[in-house]
Structures are given as structure tokens and as C-alpha cells.
Image (cartoon, rainbow over all chains, first blue to last red; front, side, top):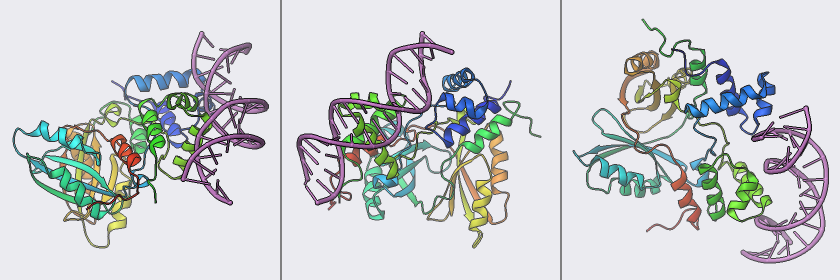
Length: 165
Length: 165
DNA sequence: GGTGAAAGGTCATTAAG
DNA sequence: CTTAATGACCTTTCACC
């Protein structure tokens, strides 16, 4: 079994990440391959789900939501799906995971300000089934969400799950 | 002061998120406005930083990293910047925040498998300055990262910080 | 490879705050 | 008066067959 992507895929993803506006033809020039190759690779990557799309990357801070926080929620037994639906209905909840450990769910929320965060938290936790919540405010973001290093690593791995002693 | 985006901006972002492949001309048709308007709005949104770009959305799971975890790290005083540099050098660290609370940093990491997660964690915490680490594995992801509801809310807010009692 | 179709830019006019 | 939207025109560039 080989890695899900090869070196060319990796270079292509890197190139598109750094300069999203360029087209297929420009890619083929930069990568020194035929345009058909680039198109085929792109189709394959999208078909395999490696690339989900090219949607606009929206910055919540620029939308007026500069405050980010992570809330760990403890859920009472059997109320999981109701809680999920509730959290999904809150626009300020950007992301929700169920996790192992004493907390049962972890969600990322944003707010207009620290004061406004109280309003959001009240809305988030104001629901039957949420037993306890602890919130941590994000101060700095030294590493913004990125996948390029991961792509580079995946592209140079020969086997899908390389041997590790 | 008005909201950073208006209703047309919101419709444009929503449209581009739902159908990223369509171009400016198609947008202008769907939104029933002139092409120049769409172009001007897009330029403005990018200039203001509301839209950061149109890079490919890469799915780590499809790259062979289906396991996601959140690690809370406790850092010894004064070692913050070294730890940041170290974490930034680990490809599996997708994101890093400094946070309030007993933990000092929160990072999102991915791995090939639960077993492989051990290797990643060892690499993450194997660094002077990291006192303690607690890791929560993400099981399900009921709400994938999304900003559309937030965009819709921002677009309908008249003032940047609407009055809240 | 050739061809129809967009993207991207500029302009004058018009409308609205 | 300032800002924005519109439709027209043009050139370059790309996507598709």
C-alpha cells in the first residue's frame, strides 16, 4: 500500500495553497509538467477527498469576532444528540468534538469581546443535559491552522503506515 | 459604526462557500448584481481581511491522519517562545493557542492511528519547558469547522457591537 | 492545438449616503 | 460631496473539446 499522495501531489497542494488564484495552466508551468497531468491530479485529489474544495477562508476576527475560546462541556447520559443539535444552532459555535476524558465535548466559540463571551457561554450552556462547562480563552495563536507540513510529510512517506519500531 | 459586512457580502460569501467553483460572472448572475459589483466586493473583503484566500481545503484524514487529539500543555515560566518554536516544527501539530486557565497552551494534533498518536505525543512533549500534558482524543465531530452561520449573523447586525442589555 | 468564454481592468454615468 | 453600483468596452488568459 502506498501513501495517499505522492511528491507531485504535495507540490501541487503547496503551490495552490501559496497562490490560490492561479489556474491549472499556470500550475503546469510552475511544476514543469503537462497541463493534463495537473488536471488529472486535481481531479484525483478531489475524488479521494484529500482536497475538499476551494471555499473562501473567512476570518472571524475581521467579521467582528476577535475573541476565541474553547469550552469543555460535561454532558449528562443519553442527552448527547440533543446537546449536539443545540450547539449546532449557535452561530458562535464554530466547531464541536466529542472527546475522551472527563469532559465529554469540546467546542470552539467566538465572541465580539470578553464581555460578549459571557452572553455566548450563557447561550451555549443554557440547555438541559449540560452538567458543567469550563472555558479557556485563547490569548495568542502562535500556530494558525495549517496542513502544509503534514502534506509535505505525507508526500514523502513511501508506505501508508511506515514501520515504526 | 456599521457592521464589517452587509447583506450582499454575506450572500456572496455564502454562495462562494457552497459553490466554490463558480466565477465572478456566475456570482453576479446569481446575486442579480453587476459583475463589477461582485469584483469590488470581493476585493474589499480580501483587503479588509474578511476573506483570507481561496486555498484548497485539505482533509487530514484523507492524507492518512484520521486521528485527531487536543493536548493541553503546562509550560514552565519563561520557556514559552522556545516551546512555540518546537511545536511549530512538528508537522502533526495543526494549530496552537495559548490559553487562560491551568493549562498554558492548547494544541490540535493528528496521527495515523491511536498507536501512532503515542509517537506524536512523545515528540510534542519531549522538550524542556513542557511540565505536563493532558491529551483528549477526538471521537466524533458533530459540527465541523464552519463560519457560515456567523457570517449570516454578522451580515444582519446593523451596528458592529449591537446593544445588549 | 484551436476556440469560445471568462477574468480583470478602465471608464462615464447614475444613484444614494 | 463622497462612495458605490452599473453597463460598456477592451485585452489577456484560461478551460474545454
